Length: 275
Length: 344
Image (cartoon, each protein chain N blue to C red):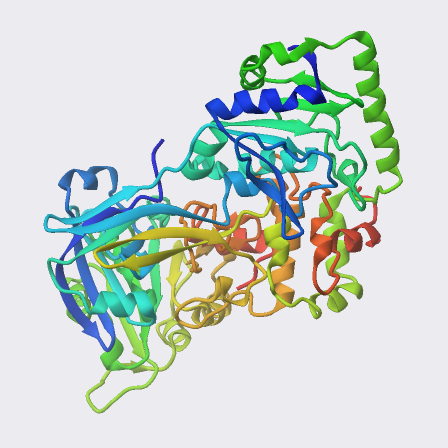
C-alpha cells in the first residue's frame, strides 16, 4: 500500500534571502527519480518536514515548466520555520505531496489572467505567473497585482523587475507604507486594483494572500464588475495530513487540502462559506 | 454462511485457539474504566458488561501511534515507515462500535486516498460482535440506524441465549475465525435460532423505549444552530475534547515529531475540533476562534458533511458516550428536541 505519510528526502540546494524573515529554498530530491511522480502544478502545496520539529504545509513557488527542483519561499514565523531558516545548503529535509487541486490555468486560456497576491501569498502566485508567462500567447493578457507591507517586504524583487521588463505581463505593485526611496503606488491592494482599473472583461482573477486581504479584495472586485465565478481564491489552513483525513481544514463539506486549496468564490458561497 | 452455537463454557477454548494466530483484544476493566485491551493468555474475556467506556476504535486507530522513524546516518537521513499491524481479533464489540468502524472505513479512504495505518490493521482484524445482552442505558442506536442484531462490518455476531451464544458467521474472515476451533461449535438448532431471534426482539423492544427523534439529522442540526438553545450550549463548552476520545466515529488527529539523539519518530495522536489551537495557524489566524465555530464544525461534520462525503453515513452511532461531557452538553438530545419542519 502506497504510504502518503512517508516523506521523501530532499536536499537544500540553494537558499536566497527574499526580505526580512523570508527565504527561498530550492530543494532537489536525493533520489532524482522521485521528481517524475512528483511534478507539482501551480497552486498545489507540499508538506515540508524538518525532522525533529515536524511538518507544515507550504504553497509551491515553482512553475510547471521549472522541473527538477522545488522552490518554497518561507517566512520565519514558528518553530519549524525557525529551524528551517537555520539550515544550510546540503542539509536534508522531507517532502510529501504535491497536494490539492491547483490554479485553473488551463480553463483560463484565452482570457485576461489577473493574479492578485498579498504578503506571503506570493509563492503560489509566482508559480501561476511564470507558468502562464511561459505560454503567454495562450492568454489574452497576464497581469499581476501585488501588495506588500513595505518596499523591503517585497518578495522576489529581482524577478519582479525582470517580469516587468520582459513585457510579458503587466506588473502592478503597491506597498502599504512607502519609504524615501519608493516611487511606486502606496496603499493597500484594494486601492491598487481600483486605481489601475482592473477590468472584468473576459477576465479571471486568482487571489492568494492572508484571510484579511481576501476579505477586502472580494468586495473590491465586485465593485469593479467582476462576478463571483471570476473570483478564484486559494485558502489556507493548518493542514497536517494533506489527504482529507486529519480533519482540520473543512470548509463546508469540502477539505482545503483535498478539494482545494483553490476554490471559485461562487462555489464557496454555494457551500455557505463567506470570506 | 453458517449458523452455529458455542457453549459459554467452551468460549475460553475458542479464545485460546484464536490467540495462537492473532492478538485478541477484548473488553477489560482497569481502574474502573472498561476498554479494549489485549487479552493475556488464559484470561477469560469480560463480555457481560454495559458497554466499554472507551470505543473499540482505539485498537485500529490508537490514541497515539508511530507513523515514520528517521535516523541520521553518515550517508544522510534514513526515513522509513513504521508498521505495527498484526493479525488481530476484536472480541465482544457492540453493534454501535462495529458501525463506528464502518464509518472509519470510509473516512480513512475518503477521496480515494487510503490511510495505510488504519487500513492495514483493519484488513488484518476480525470483528466478533456481541449483541447487547441488556440495553445500555441511554443507547439510541436504532434511532440513528444501527443494526443492533447483525451489524454491517462484523465478521461474526454472537447472541447471548443463556448458557450459549448463537453464532452468525457473516464473512470468510469470520469463517476462518470459527474454523480455528471448529470442535468448540455445534450447529445451531431451530430452538437456538428462535432463542436468538427472541433475544434480539426483546432488546429492540427495550431500546425502543430509549429512542429519540433523529430523523432528518441535517435539518435538525440546522434548526438547532438557529435556535435560542444553541447559545446556551456553546457558551458552556470547555473545549476539553473528551467527546472526541469517547466517540466511535471521531478520527481527527495531530502529527508531531519526537526527536532523540541521532533520530526520532513521527507520531500521530488524537486531536479534536473542539480545541482552540486545532485550527490556529503559526501566523496567528484562527478560522474557528471560539467554541461556537468549533462546536458548529463538530455538529455539521457529524450530521451534514460526513453524510455528503461518506455515502450517507452520519457520524453518530447512538452509543451515548458523549453524554459524559463534564458540563453536560448533550448534542444528540438537543438535536432530537430541535423543531424541524418536514423537508418538502
